[in-house]
Length: 473
Length: 164
Image 1 (cartoon, rainbow over the protein chains, first blue to last red):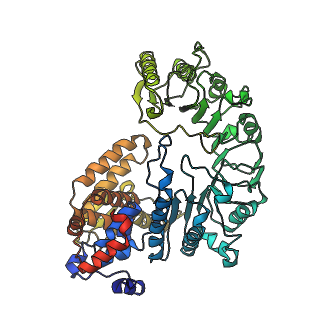
Image 2 (cartoon, one colour):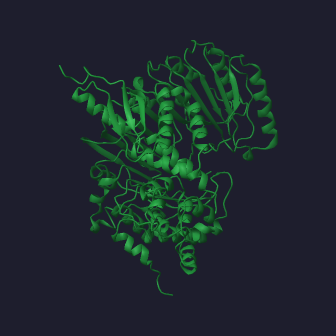
Image 3 (tube, rainbow over the protein chains, first blue to last red):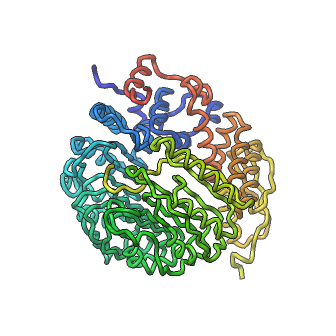
């Protein structure tokens, strides 16, 4: 069959966007193209593609659709294993879809290219093509997330490699990076040189996220150049050794992984920090606190993603003994992965040094493999009153010593507490007796709440994999 | 002496395309970047007279609605605690209109640079047509199907992934 061409579309590229043929009376009710595209911007890419059959004009608009967000639509419940035998077919369907959209795209610019699917090096030429396409359209936001499916073993050599400095260097694409404001790469091999070039070429880059990068990324060393970055996230970069950057506009910084040499220079606007273990089974609190000590008192939002029990000593992850005064801290989050009999009471020192703290979030993930927990006695901790705390959010409540003890502490020491929100873990992964036990503990706990505190249940969320000790478990 | 702070307008008069006049206080008018720009320009010049802003693209029916929206949002401008209440109000506000009115309102919001109203209208329209059939959408937007059956089938085929 001959390749399809659309006369009307061809002419559209040259004329002003497709002209409605109706009389003037109709026109008053016809939205112009840019507003129809604004309406379409609230559609998923699939919904947008479905409008192509409405008329020539809409088919043209669809081919200019600037938000190319391709996601694996498999439910993201990690605990449900996927049939890996279907992967080759799913990959081939997925890449065919992306290819068909990219090949027929008519817009001069796109806002976003997001590709979230378990793809690897065998799709290199397709992914390269998408990247070149996006960069030629002055893309603002790129997200490539090639996280392998749960249960699929993978090797770093099989991951896609960022091509701009290597395979595609002859195309001189880094000047096309200039329009990028946001770049997020997950499960993609990048080198020190790649990141350096990205940081130096993307003059407007405000958001950079590198997650689960190869063993090649070791140093990000640019202490001399003032970067435009507002948000920087580096998670599970296995061999990262050193970050030394000057980022005067940095607002948010996330680092999950083993302790590294960390210098953030001139980041006087920094207000959000997230530190975590990532794959690393050891103590991360002390080093992070040391490296960022000058910024701690100014933070408004601090979140810790911690492993509380492991083969190594993680005593330091249980709290900071002599914290600074956190005079601006409004929201503190603790995401802990633990057995259930540990104590979080050492974190009360930090909480008590945060006079304007309004919200406290505890996310508790229990190790899947440990079924029996020593039910020790709960320690009641009378501390300094928490004057401004209004909300306690508690995810993954199982009624074990670690969560009851902490919730009790918060309730007993708060003066202004208004809302308590408990969200159960996804119960699929737990057996019935655990469910019942947790439910009974919640009911007991509700009875202890003062009258003025409103209690409600949140929607069960899939947060159980917020901390991973290795890519899979 | 004629610094921008020495003159300050409290009200403006806005004229619709069908020549009706609306007296609008400044805080409400400022919800529209177009009106705000006019006011700022006049204040810079140090005018103390009431200024008239003609809007040649907006009928009085639609202007009334835009101003109703601006008034509500101006009331809430200093108060970010009542977000939920405002969202609820927004939804109730738009729910009353048919598509023709929504289209005109969207165009007026665009013309008057009232970004939050524009976004709201676009999202509302998007949400309400999402689950409709092709025929229903054609009817609502008054779209004439200018495809031959073969063309329509080809396009469906080309984007087959979206129609599964």
